[in-house]
Each structure stands twice: as structure tokens, then as C-alpha cells.
Image 1 (cartoon, helix red, strand yellow):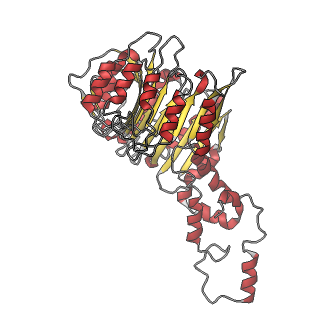
Image 2 (image 1 turned 180 degrees about the horizontal axis):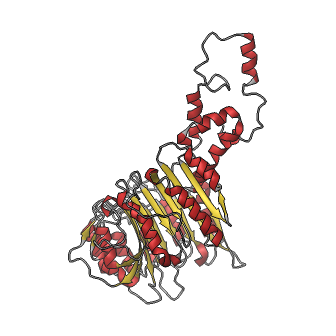
Image 3 (image 1 turned 180 degrees about the vertical axis):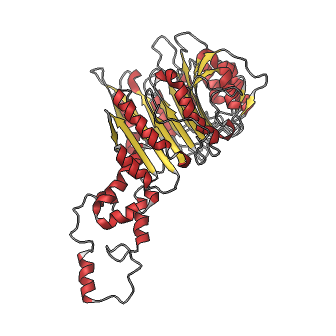
Length: 500
């Protein structure tokens, strides 16, 4: 069935009745009562048209994706412009108006404030999905974003999923702190601000007072709040015990990070950026038994203090960004990381490391641990220069290369479940042919106990002859169906990306 986005662009018909149906009616009167059809275009009942209209909004199953936000904002407005009958149906459907995304740019709001106001008024009493994106902190943008937020605040009792990307807020008119700031339906709340947020924290803390009255809140994301702790005298009361997903762009110390994590027993997904200020550490490691996904941004010298005090038995995805690992020549805490794996006894499915400073022999030891050996996806990126030894060496590549025998066994094979590999610039060096041989061996494997390598992303600038045999072999694998993205080196010292 054609998309109604396409139908909306057709020229408006001269009549609300299709010509062929009109001719049929003139020839043969229909004996049935047509009073049940409130929409006169054809013989389709109104509830069918309502269902079709609502399906126009299902452009994506991801509630945070840009496409769905754009489609959910434009489709209802298109439906109003096709004909009077479509307009009547669209205006009577509250479900069509429950998702609104407003972008404030260059002193203008898209859609405008009056359109947004009418939009929300049509939503009835249904839960709302709201987005406000302010592109910069110019005076015109701040004032207009304040007006939009004031509009949103009038519907606070019906907030369900809310995302606010705002720059240097000055929201004096929109916020009226009181005991009535409750959001009983709120499930997801995302707040991103610019780095000068600290001078407006009192305003944002007033906004976050509503979280005290949000019994359904399960996903919480905020870019920066300096007074973000779990102490009883904190000015930001967040229902930590309810949270399933947590994304914090600033945590003032490792101690505060551990305290917050320990207060979230139901946490499943976690993305944290931790500052290195000192503080007391727990005497006994904290245990997050439900945590399956963890992303950490932390300075190299603070990593050991954090992972020494934690246990993640259900962890499946681990992403680590180390800061200043090379500038300060900080050592990778190998023993602390291995102890974490041993305590947790988790079974990782995805491991992603950025600028860790781990040595090649240490990395091989990590991959051989039973908590890591079953991963399906491995991502290694390093921004270091040529003076550092690479993580991926010929020894590791040879360990990953499978024998040609069709009856090869997973016994003794490193990472037998590997299906996706991403090696960035600076993390590997190999003689020509060795890395390609490993990739090809894992693509062509037929062993039932060894997974096929389906996706590869590699930076090929380290190869001596990019357009030699390695290029030919990788192109052949791509033609056979391997999903391959390569960054190729050009003689003019420029790069381009080849994606399939």
C-alpha cells in the first residue's frame, strides 16, 4: 500500500467520491444502509481510515530516531491538507497528535508555537512523547525555547517520553516550582545542555523536581548536574531504584559513581562519564545483577578504583573510553580488569575499547578469559601515534586465523563466536596478507562450532600496498556478500570510505 506521505502530494480531487464508485452508484443503487460510513470517500468504514492514518506514524520502531521524529511531526499536518473529509478524520484522532518534536533554530520554531499549541490540544488526555531541540544559545532561540517549554509544562501530567536538548537555558517564564510538579506517566526523560550549564543549575534542578513525582520513570539521561549524588541532603532527588537505563554525562567522582550505581538495583543499561575527584570507596564491591550494558568514560588513572569495587554478573556489552591514557603514560590496570571478569563471571557478547593503552600480550590474555572468549563483536580503536606499540599484532592475528580443514573444531580457537570486527587507525600492524588471510579464513569457515565473520571495518592505511593482493582479496569477499567498510589510503593523502 502506498505511503500516505506520497498520497498527500497528489493533486486534490474535485470530489470526495472516486469517479468509478460514483458511476457504479448511478447504475446500481446499493440496498445497504450507508449511515455507518461517516467518511464519504468510497465504501471504507471510518475506523479503517483511522487505522490507515495511524499506521503512517510507524516509520520506525525506534522512538528516538530522527526519521520517526520528522515523520510523526509532518504526517498529521499532511493529512489535514488532502481534503475536508481526511481533515475531519485526522482532527478527531487523539492518537495522531501524541508525538511532537519542535526544533528552535535561528529565532524560529519548527513547527511554530501556535501550531504546537493546537497540536497538543488535539491529543485529548493521552500520554505524550515530546522533543525540544534548541540549536544554539542566541537570545532569540532562548526566548522561543522558553515559550515552547512553558507550553510543554502545561501538559506535565501527561508526559511519557520527553527529550530536551537545550543550550544555556534561561527558563524563568516556563518554570514555576511548586509541590504540583508531578509527572505520574513519565517513563523516559532526557536532558542535554551546553557546557555552561553550571550557572543555570538552580533552574534545571527546579525542572527535575518533577522526578520526585514520577513513579514510572525507568530511563533517565542528563548531561551535567554537579550536585548529582544519592545523599539525603541532595538538591536533585532522582528515583534511582526505579531506573532500568541510566545515562549521566558528568559524575563528580568515582565514589559518587559507585554510590549511584549501587542505588540502582534494576539497572540494565548504563552510560557514565566520571570525573577523577577523590572520595571514599565502598568497603565491599557493589553488585549490579541486572546490568547487561555498560559504557564508561573515565580517566585512565581512575579505572582501577572503579572496577575494583564492582561486580557485573549479567554484563553482555562493555564499552570503555579511557581519557589521558597516553598523555600521562598511565598503565592499563590489567590485574584489576582480569579480577573484575573473574568476580563477575559474566559472558560478554560485545567488547569495545578506545585508547586504553593495553599491551598486546595483555589483550590476548583478556580475549582468552572465559568471560570474553565468547564475544560476537569486537571493536578496538586507538588514536595514539607511531611511537606506541599496537594492540593487534601478528601473534594475535595468527591466533584468530582458522585452519583450512573443513572439520576444524572450536577447541583451541580464539573467539570462535566472532561475527563482527572493527579495527581502527593505530591499533594494529601486520605484514601484508596476514590480516586478510585471517578475515578470509573466518568468512569461509564451514565448521559448525565456529561462527562466520559477517561484518568487518578496518583502517587499511598501514598496509604497504593498499591496492595490491590484499585489496583484491577483500574486494572478492565483498562481492561474495561480506559486509565490509574499509578506509582506503589515496596517493593524494586523502581518505575515502568504502561501504557495503
